[in-house]
Image (cartoon, rainbow, N blue to C red; front, side, top):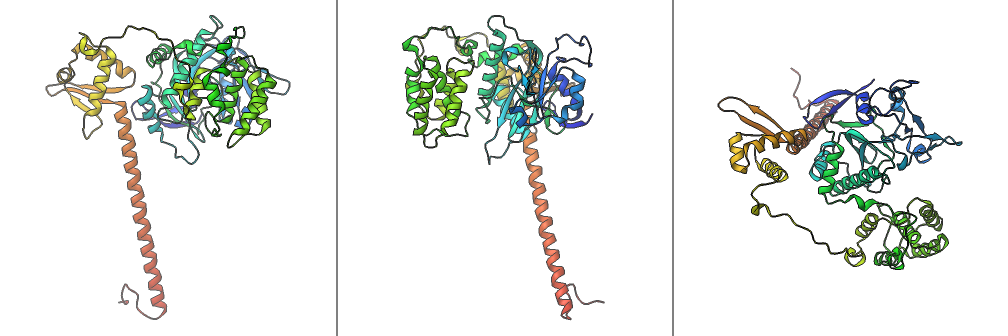
Length: 499
């Protein structure tokens, strides 16, 4: 097995890691370990995954189904895409296509994956800059980062996978989808994150050439992700889909709402964006579907709207998109998609989206009015204090007594906080014993900033050296050429006459 030379985000040390270790971390023994074995080792039920040799094959659903871990490892470098979250059952159709990779057939969720795509002609950020941006927006470090032609795929691997079942209308799946959407929305604040792709679909596969970062310690529990998502203000009921048995009331028909009318009057929508013409037509078609409009009427309406656009689609493409919406399992346009389309194309959301009902909530007291502080508040104080320290080194040295006095934090609370932040890969610290001892502490964010800065400085120095060498080479070549001409003319070279 070929070994990769990978830099870990946690401690910035270079280590050799086999591809087999990475695949094991993602799959959690969700495949059989030995071909033709009756039972797979481990505590998890075995499932099936799909792999594809190219993006074209993926789009045509022409791939290979794997149920055995060892077979996958031996052939993994042949593939470009896969389904890291296994399914209960996958099948081949008569046309040798893979059938069955639907969300409701998911068996386990092993990992959340975020697709970062940089626009054309925009320079890709370095891996360290990606990690730093994700840490700033989410507080998490990606377990694995895979290089793609347009950007990166960032894997956030769960410590233990969660099972998907049809209990309570796939509640575990709905919660996981809400977390995935929250993760993408947060990262999109700083990075060009694709928010439209399937939450648990097909992604780039880790191979010997594509893995650019792997941090084995950066694994999180599902509860950690759920609590973080709740803190971001995300409610899990928001993503509950409409049911086909829903009774449609005229006042709640989506095509009669202000957002639909405003969107219908918009003519500057173009392609190439996450919410371009195709996605907009698909969303508007779902609104027609929810409102009880027939497919033929929806096609006529949206073809007319398409003609008004500055850069319209072909009539064939519009019809294809509308038919796709009517055949899909969705029965209404989702509010988060509507909100995103309105935001991207500059439509006033306050005037178009329906106002929410007034709800009275009990608000928490201000910190100044409380006797005790929350652990999250102490965490923010400590991280802010460490980031503000203007030291020449990336780390900060202080005694525990100094920290407790400057932050006003109890010593036991500080000990618990340091331990928790270290487990969460937010800080790195060690203690120095003796009379002049204390804490040597640094935030992972500051360490990454130092790495990026050092790397840029080294790159600049190399470029300067190359430029100087090139200039010296040009000067020497010119001197040799001049001496050759002088010698040919019977004159002495610049170096002087021979002795």
